Image (tube, rainbow over all chains, first blue to last red; front, side, top):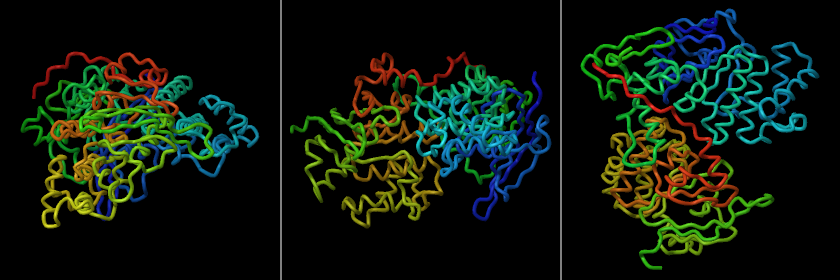
Length: 313
Length: 266
């Protein structure tokens, strides 16, 4: 097994909401090894984006953070942009609208790798070509709005990988794109991290996206992991009732429609709500009294396990 | 036009934006029957959203005819247009953008009841409560503001508001694209129940083949402003012919086949 790159132990984050502080993560244990590709899967409010921001160190100042976050290979505080690359759902949010795409890529190399502008510009051409932008030399001086949504995401990826980070973090990088462009961007990410041996942490709500690109999938619900396993196994034989329910719905959407889709009853947990027992119990078809009383502990190790009274570990 | 004719007829609809090299929509024709579920799919830039806007006349076409319930939508104006259009309601991708952030959602669902004079003032709270119940929302949520609701709840509010006009046709523009899988299924099931109970027809505009599969019987595939393929949804997606349809089907991510589930014992 390769070296440990990232370790989270009991990471809990509360975010300010109005005058209150609302728990977004309630104790997350996670590990990621060098070159590994992990999908953090969850729905709105599961805490997946908070987890990503906590890992990068970009939570708002008022956030309350507890627990351990450690990068054994990257020193005390890894630098975003240099050690950690970041790709967001909306490339407009990560790209500067008034700088040319060439400048934005070159800037990373100048700031983090001590390159001179002339050589950074040449490197930017190579990077644009690698992420599939045609005619990169001519496009270098164009601003982001001259590119399509899919091309902008390619450019955002070029910026994220420019400094050669050990870990690339991507938050729903394809959910604003149509299916055809989504497939292209996932192919690109897949190729880049394989070539470079970069580790990837992909945050998504989409099981098929996770299955396309990840070696391992960790499922978040209400701020805690409910299941983690190698991707193929998790998608073929999910253990946690929540994962199973999500998969049943996703598979119904793959089949020709006859009758209603499998549904998870009831709403997701309210962010500010108190949780007693298992957070999924109110929606779980298998819940018994114990589930409502007593929070199921994690059974398994940091890479492969499940938190459920009913599931076999 | 006999009452048995199609609910929606689109004939030779065309739109080219000033200065654009190619038409956004060129010569599009199709019909949609009462209670029929039709999906309009295509990649971004294929013209599907422009087509939807032309149909409801949010933008004016260069050419073409749109008939709704046998009447020419493009020839009408003023009150008759407004009355006819009440029967054709839009539901957008982002309900947060479609709802007024400063007004309680119950009042927003009541708007069409007031504007179209459908329900006398005294009966409106009860009518709103009934609409909330129909879309599976707790009527107590009527007092909340849009930002106090989840994405799925907001989309239910948008659907309740569309239903307030007692429409015969919904134009659904990516109604589940921003929703999580579990909420997506709830909304698609809700729409299906409404159709069975009330005979609603819809045109579902989407790039998501899963949504098209679940919520349409017939599919229209658009590329470069034209309808390039049309047929029964299951048949078209199982054996796509047009290059654009093939590209959409090929790009769809599929899950690996399941294995028998492990035994669960609480």
